[in-house]
Amino acid sequence: MSLDMVGPEPRPERFAVEEIRRSLEHERDSRLAQLRVIDDEARDAEQDFVWAQRESIQRVLRDIETAFARLERGEYGVCEDCSKPIPVERLDILPYARHCVSCCRRRAS
Image 1 (cartoon, one colour):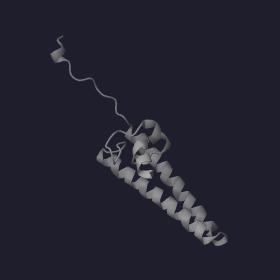
Image 2 (cartoon, rainbow, N blue to C red):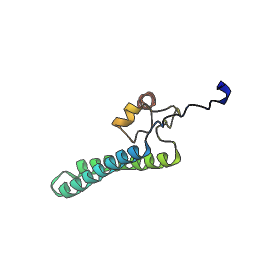
Image 3 (tube, helix red, strand yellow):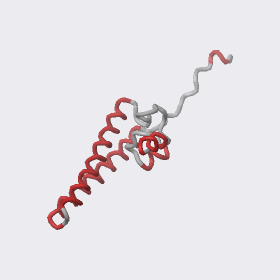
Image 4 (cartoon, one colour):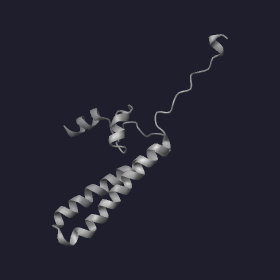
């Protein structure tokens, strides 16, 4: 067989969509559970602290929903700033990451 007749090697998918979806759902469920606990304990806590926690969790929930949308569009795992792939190790830790570490550092400085 000549090399001309050999097609491109099948590429393994970088991410298994269902595994990503499960990971994002787990993150979302965890944050929603945290919100319920905060709401239940809000009566006994300092309101400023509770408000800050709620805002932080709601921000993460928005990031998770954005990750679902990026997954549907085929853009999951790509840095929104530099368009380079986000390392799988980072996505394992933070499945709703929108930026690579380099861009996060640049944004923080």
